[in-house]
Image 1 (cartoon, helix red, strand yellow):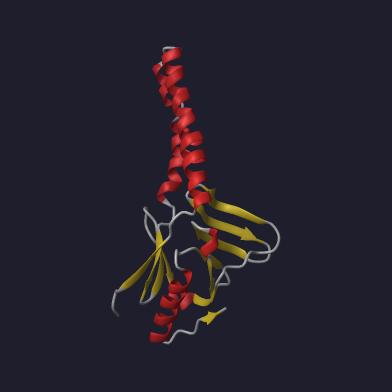
Image 2 (cartoon, rainbow, N blue to C red):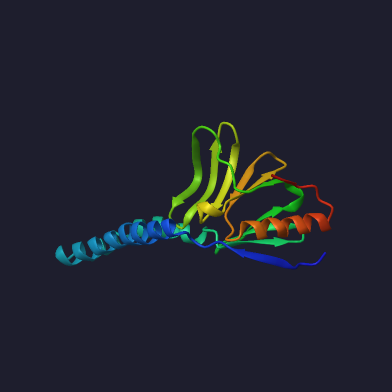
Length: 180
């Protein structure tokens, strides 16, 4: 099997950029840093320079798990992230839906980030069970239904081209994936 892959970028939409830069960097990291420096100099206590550290860690950690893009290989879909890609074997894919649907009722984020660098992580819903989301732009969503009944919502910049690439690989390897 050939290791060729087609990459689909996932750029942040305008709203997500605004939240990331103003709220995440500005309020989440900037304000505590300014306060820490001000307190350290004002009270002449150097340990107060550590004040922003928890905020910088909390708002900086999601940077390493954010989706950068998606790749379609001959046997998998990859969620490309700075700290290791996530691999979804094509043989576990049962359906693709564009645009993605939303689960009815309340959804609980288990290990998730919502707003900063987009929305990504794992979620749970009474009707869907566990699902995974890697969305940087709500206008470009694609829903991948897996054989274990979980769902994966992603947002490649060109959803139609992404679906076509998956369809091409599935056809070439005799996989039965339903397009909705």
